[in-house]
Each structure stands twice: as structure tokens, then as C-alpha cells.
Image 1 (cartoon, rainbow, N blue to C red):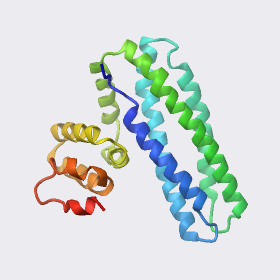
Image 2: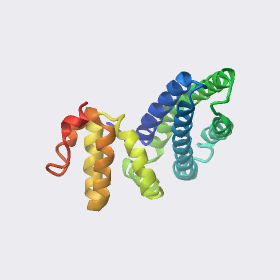
Image 3: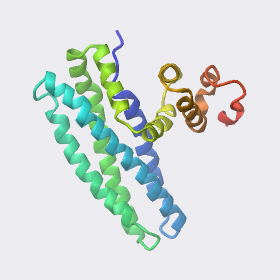
Image 4: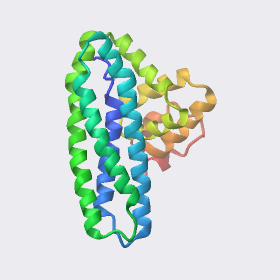
Length: 226
């Protein structure tokens, strides 16, 4: 029986964001001010979503787990504290980068980010396996869906749209279709229109699925397939 995978959607998005930023950091040229500013802008979005995700896990998922399984969240919490300290260090260094930074400074930043990236991937893999198993053992699917709903309700709508932009780009067609149907059921029409715009920007691989839900004539789907 397939269970509710509480970590799957945000972790897929974070893997995309981390990989994209790592590539950009490796290619950035200190002699190109525009490239450095674009890297910093990309990093701000990444670190913002990493922080939002950590807060959701600490304040909602791990809190619920700790209530049912005392001590069950301890390992995750300790890993979060270590990762968040390294994230803050990297964030501060990113903000200090400029076109005047040396190539060596940028290279060291790239290597240190790569080390953080590797640690983060191991951390989320642990959550998707060991922590997910704990959740499945102590929570029903209905309870896990309630936890997911609580996470969404605690997000500002603009922040949720930002998450969706990256989630949609990493979902299978089945996952994408299921999420859209759910959003269409619960969102006001104006809010769903904003979701439509978000999907149109970031989900070319699922244009065929999206066509079943978009208002007639709203999009030129050939654009999404480019």
C-alpha cells in the first residue's frame, strides 16, 4: 500500500534548487558583475526556501512526531542545527561576494557549498527513509495529510507559489495532475489563476496534463513545450 510521503514534494524541489545553484556557482566568473549578482539572487531564493522548509519540519512535522514518539525527532533536530549553522555561514559569504572577489574566493565558496550540498542530500535521504518509516508507523494517512495541510496553511500565499514553481518542475505527471486537482478544489478562483501562471512558467514537461485543467484559451501550450 502506498503511503503519504510527507517529504517527497519539497525535497524534490530542494534537490533541483541545490543542483542548479551548485552549477551556477561553479560557472560564475568574478570578472562578470552580472553573473555574480545573478548568483547572489539565486542563492537568496535557495536559502530562503531552505529556511522555510526547516521551519516547517521543526515546528510541525517533528513536533508532531515528538508528541507521539518521545525522542523520535532528536536526530533530525540535531542535524537541522548543524546544517542551519553551515547554511548561515554560506549565506553570509555569498552576500559578501562581488565582482572584486578573487577567483580563489569564489572557488573556495563553491567547494564549501558542495560539501554542504552533500551533507544536505544525506540528511533528506535519512528523512525520506528512517523518519518516514517512523511517521508511517505512528500516523495514519489522514493524519499525515492533516500535517501537510497545516504546513501549507502556515505559509504566506506568495511563498507557497514560490514552492509550487519548483515543485511542479520536479513532479511526475501523475503527481502533477493530483496536486492540480487538489488545488482547484480548495483554492478561490483568483488564487488558482495565480497557480496557473506559476505552472505556465515552470512545467513544460507536463503541458499535456495541464491542458485538462487550464481555462480554455488561457495559454498557448506550444510555448510550454519549448
